Image 1: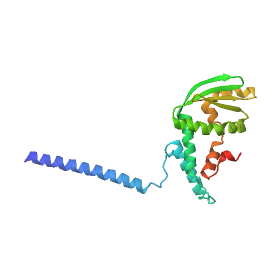
Image 2: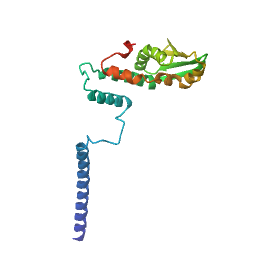
Image 3: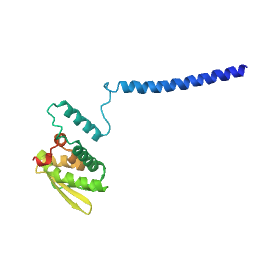
Image 4: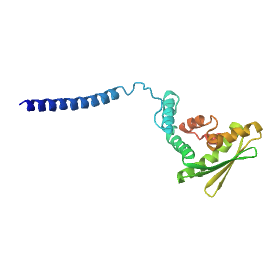
Length: 192
């Protein structure tokens, strides 16, 4: 009889524990769902592209003059994918000093990255020149891109070399205005 009582107590105890854990799990999920609009201590929404898109949507929502018939978040998403490809899906084969600057050879590692580099290098040299006065020449050869970036200011040569391929691609504050223009249905590269 004593053994039966101990087994019953253990079964009841185990059942109560399982029930409590299930209830706790449900309670936390329910509390989370009820408080999902409460501010969180987190700042990032996910990956960079997702966070950028979320930031743009927040700004568009806050602007009462937003013309939603012109908004094109998909164009922005595609551009951000290009930026990801030119950052991650390339191999920088070499970066060498040249007179007045730097020569970099970059090879895309995917077909998507090859297309992205074509699009990016179509616009970036002119933008870099506007931002800095630096001259960027791009030549495609045997599946690679050969970039030569130079300046007529001797005190900026080491800066170009130090920035290297990705620093030169990220240089300046033009990206945010371009992203904003794209989200609003404009082509920022045709406005210059």
